[in-house]
Length: 375
Image (cartoon, rainbow, N blue to C red; front, side, top):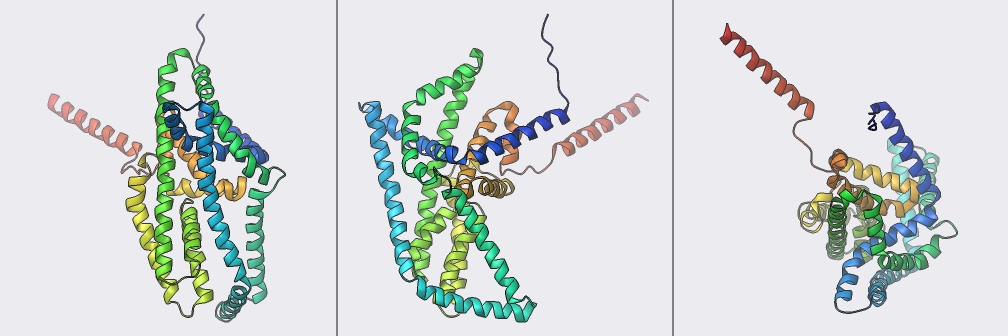
């Protein structure tokens, strides 16, 4: 007796999917300390995999090749962190003076708001306090937990090494999970997904480097203090679509407001960053970042906010690469292609219902003409 393939109704399937998503979010939230370093390690492993493969082709042992790639990555990341930390130390030395100027400007703004829109200063202070508390909780989600600092310092390199060392074992697992007749399809999906993810991540890093240089040059020309620091931070924030761009502009504008008189520098910063965003969106992203994994504005903002709610600042940075990975996989699976199109930024000019209705009307017209001719 042949098994019967029962088709479940849509409301039942959608309910199961919703409950599944809730369980996934619950697990991600509660297992942050364990999964967060693994997520970062997975991205680093994907980026380092081509280098490890090239070193192995040159005759190096697998363990030696992985260790050399890891050392290079640690030196690069350590150099970037050292530069940012040294800039932050210099910034901290001048913080008392900047704080006095900031409080003076803040008092003027609060007086203007109280006079123009009748917002009491006490209410303004409450809004500022609530914003600071929410920001602290967001950062706390990233650094909190017993394994937070330990994970970022020690666990990530260990996970990267193990993921690269057991790469073949992991790939074979995916082949064995599916039926044997799907081996060729699984191999094709894994190969295309790996190459697309690597090109996407490398392009994203190159884009951040170019944006950091343009930001720093623009701020240096405008005479903004700590121009390079704000330029690099702005490039990192640029990885957070829309939300990161707003914060990246706000930081140097606030610094210029505190350290300079008038509004010329602030307007110059807004104009320069607008031009940089135009260059980034119309030239850098299409050429450096694979257009196949571009996420539309709605889901970009949504996943960044969801990532922040789950894992804090780390979740905001990790959300876009992992949704891009999902889109790559969705685009290569026939049954998941509608989800890939939903995440993508290609907007169709007509919807399916309109096309179906036009075909139906055209068919009715043809049938009516044929009926008249028969009469």
